[in-house]
Amino acid sequence: MIEHIREQLGLNRPLLVQYGSWLLHVFHGDFGTSYYWHQPVGMLILHHLPVTLTLALSAIFVTLIVAIPLGTIAALYPNSLIDRLSLGIAVSAQAMPSFWLALVLIILFGVMIPIFPISGDAHAWNYVLPAIVLGAHSVPAVMRLTRVGVMDVMASDYIRTARAKGFYGYRLLSRQVMRNALLPVVSVLSVQLGYKLGGSVVTETVFAMNGLGRFALQSIVGGDIPTVQMLVVLFAMTFIGLTLLADLLNAWLDPRIRLA
Image 1 (cartoon, rainbow, N blue to C red):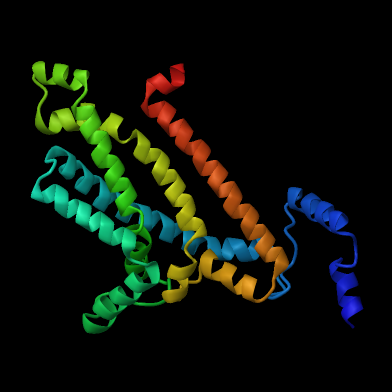
Image 2 (tube, rainbow, N blue to C red):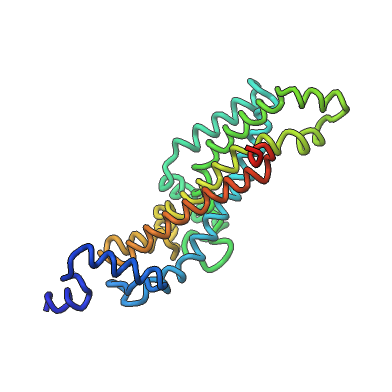
């Protein structure tokens, strides 16, 4: 019986032959059949991908609306109370494990003050708490980069020239400062998006979301080799693609990079 299954799955062939056959099928869009769910791997991944993609983009949005304003305010008022509070928030967010923050939010906003649903992915409200949990870990890095970038740009010669020409306040910040200060943030956010797509296992498991992270965990536990192989390839290609996208965005934002 076991030998028959091995022959049916092609596991009795040499490893190099198995790998070559798998690679050839991948190039033709055939990612194999799941050992665990007995369905094509490509269909299973397409079924779970929208949940993880929505969650990852929501987490990046949370990171942006929290980290960039905090980092900018901290840079405009260095060594002030606001700067120190922002640093405290960054350190606290960096130190909190995702599963602990998820449980705290579930208790606070799902049990004590039942505002948001605590499981599932059927509605937009289901993504609020998971997005906060997944986005919180990126806030410190983006906030510190924004703070350093804004402070460096504010101390540059062309900003002093812009002030001499009458640029102040929001006009100076939006037209001159932020475009140059956020260049490093673009690169970090692209990498962070890759982390969100590939590192959502804990968040999706705690909130019982039917995304790629939870699906990957189930595949690993179930020994579903074709699915795990395809997920690894997918996550790797995602990182490569997002890194390339970050380089293109930086070149578009900064003409000096294009000239180099």
